[in-house]
Image (cartoon, rainbow over all chains, first blue to last red):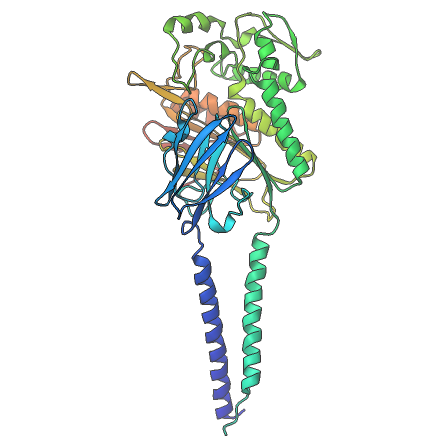
Length: 147
Length: 338
């Protein structure tokens, strides 16, 4: 192989690798836009098996009523909370606002719960990946919490 | 014209093939990550939220749900007609009960004896006076009237006929300190009997890990900081495979009145919330029934006596948090402190 040919081969290979890296980098950047915490949704489950998906990026209010009672859920400034409810002890209201994937609010008397999931795991049906998974502050992830 | 090894056309084809291969590889990797999906169900039983996640058919999961309904109807002291309700209202007569009811009461009796009565399911005579959700504290007079009827020695078990009774008609059984552990063990037997090798049972924080995850890795269970609000901070983790993690803590149910905090774990000897320097105790064991009972027993003992107990037992591991904020773990611990 002549010197000129070897040089050309090296340049060709370098160009191919450069383009590949650019493609990979672009793909990783695109995926990172949906990383945990960057785009979260609240899945609201009621006693009748209904599930609502509320984006934390959109301020909204949801009223959920079943035979067990009524809860009013608010999303504002990237947080979700139970604003008011007619349950006897108001534990769900007192739990306050949550905003990170893995956190949860529970209203036991109304059998209603709100779980935060990252957008890519929320399919609007209450995904199995989100069930029983609570990871409030660690990036390692836990399958369950003992408390 | 200079000689090149790759013509323009060949170069573009090669680049396209390589880029396509890389993209396909990433997509395949992503689909493999989300591969075998578990089935999951969330139920509200035993006055708490229960989540069962299993890599098995929906039919098996439905059997587990049915099993939970069975136990709710059988073990609850407030469900009229349940085994426990019947025993509590039998005026001292023996009651025919389900085999499971007999088993859990027999186990509870063993723990009562080994703990010298600090674990006592006949606490029901007093616990029914308190309402930690509504913040109701009974009068000292009513506690004093009920306390003499708290004694595990009032339990009468007839194994041959599967019958249970209370020699004191005013004694009351409350299985709250052992029921979830027993039920978790029962569900574990169900899953394994059905051939399900990977499941996670979470009964209001009483966690049972059946097998490993499908990829062979252990389940990871976090221990909540008892001094933080629910779900907001983790102090330790355990990697579990066919093991259970059960925590007894002050923060689950309590209320404040007159500047005094009243916690839901009652002392059978006084009828009042136990006086202890521990704020939580977490047990890791192969048996959730055992873990449930010992989590309460160690909590009642307090730090010093609990550490002595741990020195003499090798069948479970424990993590204790005291009111000084110290985290104490058993020797050769399985806990990974955060």
